[in-house]
Image 1: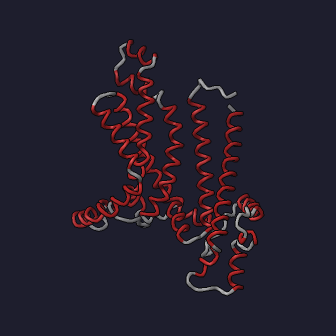
Image 2: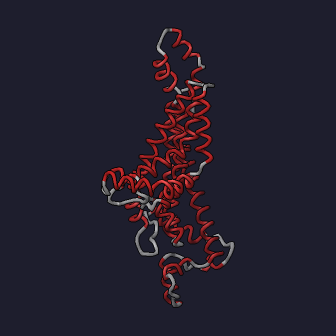
Length: 334
């Protein structure tokens, strides 16, 4: 087990390095093709050569390689790795350190992910279990059809329909019925409110959780169907145990192994969806900050946030693999 964990950690570091290097190559090429992002610092006011040179030096954009299309700019990449090792992820065009931005934005993203996790766990486990128990019946076909429909409906479509079709009448109704500061009015508020983070995050979190629950529903159904036909389940039934006891202790429990691996997949999907969700709902979270940084051509923030999100994703995937190894004694890694 120890060798397996060591191997997975090393693979995680290699994956993170490749992600950072690929991100560096893409941003470098974007700078070489689209022009100097330091100009975004001045807005609509054309800078003098000395002012532009000072900003380029401040943000590490003064290397001549950025003017040569196709040059990988390995020097700035090595410098960036050294800064990352010291906990320095750069600063925004407004002079604020990326670590401070993350420290403010991350709690809102964590709140959003808490709602997302509860949603897809409840929806996925409940509907997947019902579909497995009622295999071949109308409820099974209905649940599978629903999961396909959810998969076919991107999260940004859900958010657009909700924000521009439902929030206006629902918010107006809630305010007139319960008051402007009531929980229903805050729930249907069309944008994020820093004063009421939990209330205004619930609906976006549920929508994002539903978007990630489709694959989870099918996985839970498939895993439980496999266990319903297993020998140990037939033996439990032959002993006269109730169907509820068999389902909880012999089917759902043993189906948790492949479900654990799905956590990593759903997490990465939710991470990608959070950028869209937070951007569209004006949530000041990691995704919202990244959305705004891309719009403002704030290269340092984009690189820093994506690097941190990649590191979090790699850590989650390693933890999931370790949990899987601990849950399944049939797999021998030594």
